[in-house]
Length: 411
Image 1 (cartoon, helix red, strand yellow):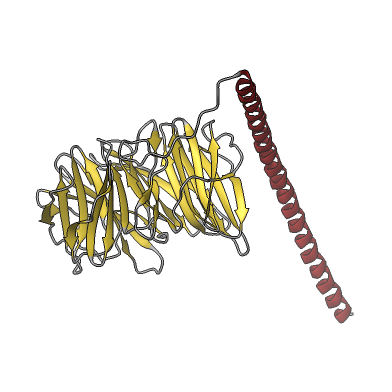
Image 2 (cartoon, rainbow, N blue to C red):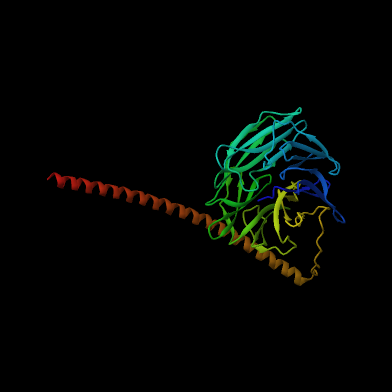
């Protein structure tokens, strides 16, 4: 799950920023052509969890002090920050996750609070307008996930989508309009046999792509699904091993790219068909953090690159920004090109044929998987029906035995 103490931001001008909590302060670093800047202190004596967003030409950072008082820091250049204390009607517990959504004249806020039931929280919505917090609305009751209680994303200026657990093993989605406040119905997305240990979600114009890890007693499974309109695809198990973690899905130049770590080794799988078929799972061999983590990534909702998360290094919080092609990203050395002779052309054509064959086989396997799932379902229903009939016969037999014994006693 995402590290709640770290945020990554890619600005509209292409600069990359790191925000993180360390020893009671919120700090910021940015990447320039010559490397990463020294840490800049934005606020001190703060709680470890904060919210960050961009709106227009400004960045906004919502944080709380150790007493729970909320503050808003805003900056147009991410260098000079203006701090304002928020009205005290709303306070933070220090572990409260906030999702901040500025508009022209207000700050909209999604957050959670504990309830009387252990392990169940309230998901709430409120607005800061004209210097005060408006009365909060309860969106739903839900079961918070570890580290990241819920996930949220802004789809357009007034349109957002929320992801949260409505059951121990059920992930659901709910859409909202901010102005006028309108809440949609809840839609179950994923139901797993055991709670998922990690989750990554990204939206494009047509689909919701989900990559998650289910941890069983002996093995973990890396599973992919997508939602298109009202239909949800069949779960596709991409990998099974003893220790999988840090899953992430992102979109890059029309491709769906899935990544995760297996015993610390990064793995990757790519789909060029919008998630319908996938290539082979391969080890990721480019530079990668030795101690990997994930954190929220903002500012990358583009056609060329679309992601809500970024890998980082636990040792120094610096991001692993291999997928980004922004001017702020460190450039990888280019590999020598292959001479454009007839041999290389033939080799390229052979690769394309093999690639096409792999895609056809993947599509066939997916079809067979759906057929096997349907047969298993029919077999399970038939077995359950036979078990019910057998139970009824046993009960009838027991009743006849009792009647027989009663008749013998009467005689």
